[in-house]
Amino acid sequence: MKRLAGVGVGWRRQLAHTLDTMEGLGFVEVLAEHLDARGPLPEPLVRLRERGVPVVLHAVSLGLGSAEPPSPERLTWLARLAERLDAVCVSEHLAFVRAGGVESGHLLPLQRGEDALEVLAENVRAAEAALPVPLALENVASLFEWPQPSFSEARLLSGVLERTGAWVLLDVANLYANGLNLGTDTRAVLEAVPRERLAYVHVAGGVKHGGLYHDTHAHPVSTGALMLLEELVARLGPVPALLERDDAFPPPDVLVAELDAMRVALARGVARREAA
Image 1: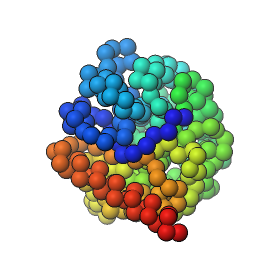
Image 2: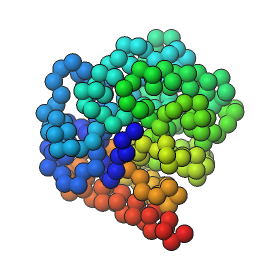
Image 3: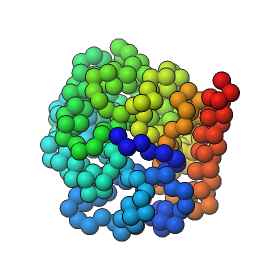
Image 4: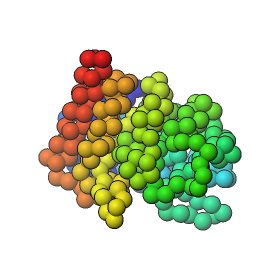
């Protein structure tokens, strides 16, 4: 896979003008579900491609953790979009979104057991075979766990990497949320990520409400997520990192300040690694 680098932003129509004029943009990520595989691509996105800004295609509806295999029609649609965008990779979630034909409307956590892991791996391999570019898998945030998991979140990640050729999209905001809400061992998850399989990192904001931390993509980036980003870099070295915003879009100066905060965290991680 072509290596991403630097700091990027999730491309949204509300941010199109800001990104169109932003200097030093490492890459962008565009939501597949916001695009028409056959219709014209948004002009601002085309201009970014013409500038040479790498594009990642990000999906939320494939349902790799579902009991049934991924839909051939969805895979064909993703493959066509990836080719039109000249995407570096396609990323999707370690989650299920439907069962028995019923859509959940959410990225739901996977049951952490051997049978579920085997089904997940089989679905991932099917998606890899259908896509023209590498597939990267993202950890999700959750407010609950399935009862009596057989292994940890770190083991789920390492297990699917052992069984497939997929890459990792590590979301440190989701990991931070699970650490607070579920007691997830965040350090173990960081240590489960091999540098040679890391595609890029997600960073996003959230808010505490009713005793729980909600990963909203609509609030300032949390200090906790930035600390995990720093920890990851201290272990692996420089990594490409992308800011996600899906609501309450900030003015350009605030967006730039969040990107600068990410760059500071990345630099701190590099300094710690060099000092060690």
